[in-house]
Length: 292
Image 1 (cartoon, rainbow, N blue to C red):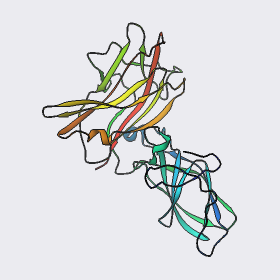
Image 2: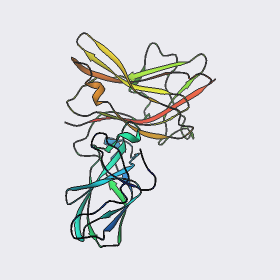
Image 3: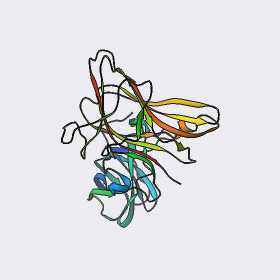
Image 4: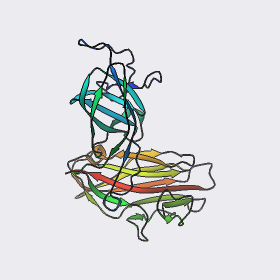
């Protein structure tokens, strides 16, 4: 549970969560801490090789001289029992699968390192920080809907299809186009999958996406073996009430849930929600990431 009286959070031993620590007792001779203030962390990318710089970095995982200090929801101000210059390393943190209880540092974003001069009873402001993708990040697939041809195919069961938003349309997230699906009483089921099958790696796999939906949307994977395949949902996204959101979906456990699976596709699907005459699904900037 997150308590709002404090923004200082620590790791729990069983479940990664955030707990209040405003009355933390310090050890050692120093009794008056200095304070570190972090406003936000933003992302820079090479668009052609890494795609959009859109991000949803919510937390900072902080190390001082390689000692873990804590995880803090941004913007944050927290005490540090150090005096003088020290090396501060900050790992960008996310809500994995969009769930607050599964906050973690995002291993595909590079740590930010600063030399900070701490003064007791004084606040050092770092302000805005910049991260990039790790050099080891491998982009298995990206789709930004800027090309006429798509790398997503609707399945034979789908009665709705993917369109491009019009250039200059307020429905577009960024660039010239986003992907759009319209569901109504006739076109009431949508399902698509990546054209390409990807080899299941011995490493974490995440799917990043921007979305703005008035209808629920399920995202999952289809895993393939020599004689079997499994279509497994991972998360169902709910209506965003007209707002664009960013999510980081962890595919790793599902990809390894069944023995003998060697390749996979990402899929999305939904029926038109009950009570809606028409609904719209907007998405953009799909990125499928892993590492060697």
